[in-house]
Length: 281
Ligand SMILES: NC(=O)c1ccc[n+]([C@@H]2O[C@H](COP(=O)([O-])OP(=O)(O)OC[C@H]3O[C@@H](n4cnc5c(N)ncnc54)[C@H](OP(=O)(O)O)[C@@H]3O)[C@@H](O)[C@H]2O)c1
Image 1 (cartoon, rainbow, N blue to C red):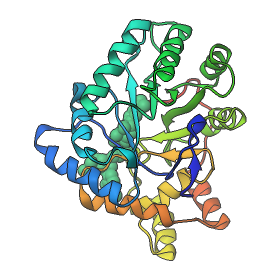
Image 2 (image 1 turned 30 degrees about the vertical axis):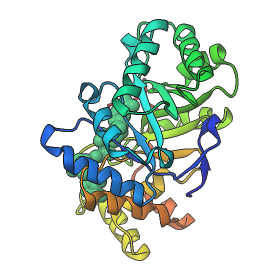
Image 3 (image 1 turned 30 degrees about the horizontal axis):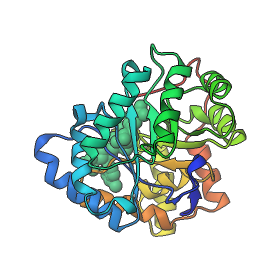
Image 4 (image 1 turned 180 degrees about the horizontal axis):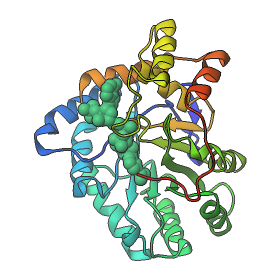
């Protein structure tokens, strides 16, 4: 589970990284310590976006990875309204300044917006040819969006699709994951703990997680992360703002669930019907 190629970059990275959502001012020191601890423990896929805290999240990450850039697989995202030809370049250069680096490992369109995909993707390609980004991808794209994106980009160009995926929201399993696997696109699960809705320990699903966790000498969240990254195509970016949470999440890197355990989790958190539109946070 620890050595999966990520899209077209072919750089091996752990299946589980760290997301970095909006961080309050007072949390800055703690956030930096948590990010650095994550790196120590092998959580080296760090996700951010120009939107998060209006650049503050990127600035905090920039501070956290100073002197450690080579250890990190760094991902940021452009806002849809900035995704024009000149807007992508300006946004990327701003992100690089905030992150105090000369390159992103992957740059994503945060969700679909007003600018035509050919324009956005051409801008990504230009940045790639200059070495400012090493790969690019999309976020919150359903299978129709992906078809259109593939038609514009051609095969082998889209590194990943970052989508909402947690135990109680498995909608991407209907069509998005199969599409991505057919076309060699990595699937990054965002909000893998359901943002703030992780199954309660007293609930039926929570009890199944607790039983499997006890059998594996793991925590319920580690079991959830191992389930969500069970396919070769899957990655997860739990946000964790404290050392204790980072240490807990890193424990998932050593966890492999049995077929029986995977089946029990599938049954406890049913897939449900395919929704009319792709869920997003
Ligand atoms: N592409 C998109 O549209 C999109 C949308 C949303 C999110 N994202 C990305 O996905 C990342 C994660 O999403 P998220 O923050 O919405 O949800 P999440 O990762 O599902 O949940 C984060 C919450 O879980 C807590 N937590 C983390 N590890 C824990 C542990 N071991 N034990 C107990 N609690 C724990 C965190 O608390 P503490 O912070 O206090 O540790 C935080 O409150 C974001 O940071 C962002 O990078 C992308």
